[in-house]
Image (cartoon, rainbow, N blue to C red; front, side, top):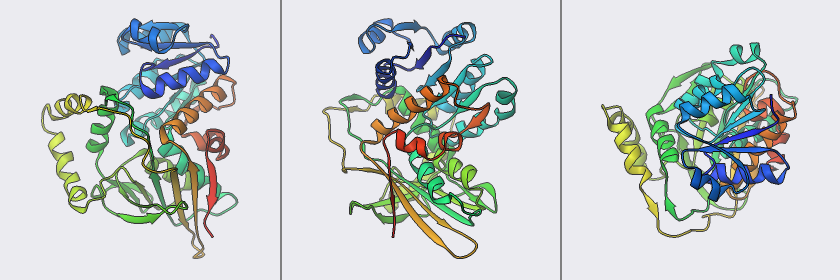
Amino acid sequence: MTGEIWVLGATGRVGRAAAERLRQAGVETVVTGRSRERLAQSSPGSRAVTGSLDEICERIATEAPAVVLNTVGPFAITAPQVARACPPGTHYVDVTDELSAFELLHGMHQEAAATGRTLVSGAGFGVLATEGILLHLLTGKETPTRVRVDAIASVAIEPGPLGEALAATIVHSLLDGGREVRQGRLARARAGRAAERLTTPDGDAVTTAALGSGELFAAWQTSGAPSVIGASALVPGNPAARAALPLVGAALRLPGAASFATRRLAQVTAAEAKERPRQSSWGRARVEWPSGDVREGWLRTGDGMTFTVGAVTEVALRLAKGEGRPGAFTPARLFGPEVALAAGGEFVLAH
């Protein structure tokens, strides 16, 4: 096995920045994608492996890098494929927020443990920011009865098309639909329910609402609470738009609809760069215990995309150093809440 870290999707926004950060850390970094020319432009000086995802997976199985960092969506498709391609001793990390991808990857826990592989899903803003503050609140406490986590991203917009990978992830998240944890089980719920108007510690008013997501899965696995809601500010704040989400999900299940929507969404283009809408991005957790005790806390960071790059590279570097353990995990369940601080976050506790 080599000490290389392979970055899949290295011409995308997260993959490009992650590869650069790994190179700055002195890590031998291999970048992958379909276009050698684009890889040379985005990651000059790095070894490039080109081809389809199937072809790249064949190379992973043969060359056995230390870590594979996956930024290619839709993760419900790519995560299990790439993780299974990793030979014994090669670790895997991605930035997914797709609930179905978490379920699939965590279904590989026993397989990964038996082959000495660590699989980490959700090493990005939404999951790590909410999971990090939740674990911080849970330290030394008994199992809670009720948990709610909220992801409030603030991201600067780059000019250019949205891109197929991000478009596919958005479409697959809508296909997953609404979920929540009831009586200790993952259950279907109306997408966009449980809307709540929050005021961040910076004083910004933001509406979040529930949608099946990685934040929900991570909060459930981390807390063990029988009642969990995972919410996000990415869910439309307008009540009429939230009410339409179940209809959108149903329409996407029609034959060919998801592929068509992905292609059209990928072509949506931002004409110019835009600053992030709020100074900070926030992960928030509210926890209730059987005693009646209630605690709330926040994790503050800057641009949510920058935090995602910090998170996935921090996890990849730790895996390359052999600091993980075999099996399937979310990042803070594996490395503790401090990994969120190492990625660029700051805990802010409510009084």
